[in-house]
Length: 164
Image (cartoon, rainbow, N blue to C red):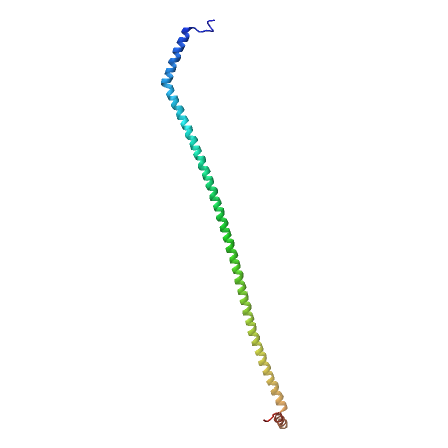
């Protein structure tokens, strides 16, 4: 039974050894261990705080980036809209200018045609008058070659004249 129940002297010396070990641990090891644990706890706590701050900053940056992206899209859409409007305006102005120039060219062509037409008519009239004079001259020379025919023509004109 001695093996199962320890003696009182053994218990006493074990208690003194334990208390001595406890005193040495408290005196020399407990404070540094607690300080190391507190330091580690504060380091972990600071790391968690920094991680939370970084997470918040990332969320803010993401929100800001999305805002900037939305603004950039809006600005891009405005620029494209203005460019399309300017393009349409330039096309419309070019069409109007082309129509004006076309109308002006048509008017100029009509004026040139009218001028050439008048010149051609004048030329034709001059040629007709010239030909008429030549034919008349030839006819008169032929018909009035002798004195009798000249006298008959003068008499005929005198008869046609009505004296007032």
